[in-house]
Length: 463
Image 1 (spheres, rainbow, N blue to C red):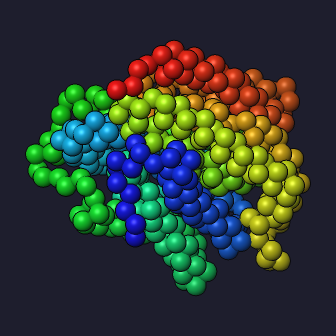
Image 2 (tube, one colour):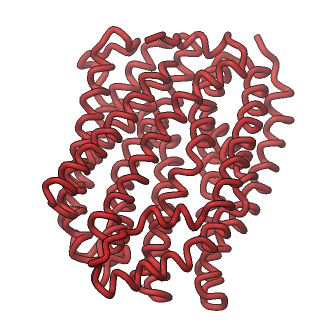
């Protein structure tokens, strides 16, 4: 496998470099998204639509704990990219060691709390009625694998910060493929139901961790740690925390949105409405994979060149990333507008022996999902500016604007909208809150990104 040195981030043409960084990231995100998508299709076809709703209830809790690892990873990766750009290898090593120690401490505590409060958390996130029991089965098993997920997510961002996107891609592919194989065995062959789906997911996390560990112990990684690097360093922890808090806050808001959406939709339409949202939530993860891939590829390029004070390259990376992401987002938008019914049908069981309740849920999902999906993704072509703009501030280590812009769409606009609109518009109010929030957040991000480029990057002198 061809290796990409960190120095290439500051020398290769931006367009070529962004493709080199973004394509593996996009493939990795695609495979992970396909994993969630196909996993949901398997569960829907082999267990039932109520099972899809049950997983949708559990995901925000387990993903939030896993996102602690990503937050620590992204915060540290920003430091590592800039440290490598400034030839400060010791700081890069110390940062990585602190990431490992902090991830282990935090996720272990969170898992213990998650297990202790299991019977309170599941209903709070919408796991009521027929959803509660399958959600609890899935939740308890998956939670034991979440520390491995956190370490994988942390390690993956560091691998990318080293300029090794292909290795990061493989790390994302392994748990996805493993999960799908285990899904077939545990659900279809062994008929373990929700427990089978949960064990398949957990084993996928463990496989990913094994590969990430292999990478950092191998010759491919430039970050070779010793015990002294694992000791917690307060200044580095503060910097990791301030930058990683952006990612953590975003995931916390996402978890809060799941909580609100599941409860609001349960009130409006019961388990069937949550099943509609579960399908749309999977598409939100899956359909935008190329845009997220460009964003992930952009981060180390912007961070390295900012650290090296190559401001013209930073400006070029911003413009190129926005262009690539906007084109890809438009292609995604067209597919979702044309084929929403076909997409919804993939998730539903064709078993003629379904219960009357399951048949009623399926009919509701087929009737309501296409229009809901079109509303949710109506503003997709413009989101590139918002994602790249927020990512830029995170890449250069400006935690406060990165945090505020990251929270703009989902926290400042979307949450108020889903609290205000549904009492007047019902479920339509829930779905139109998505594009309204997208438009408002893009306007705000565009204003601050333009101001930053004009006052900082254009005015700054390069060495």
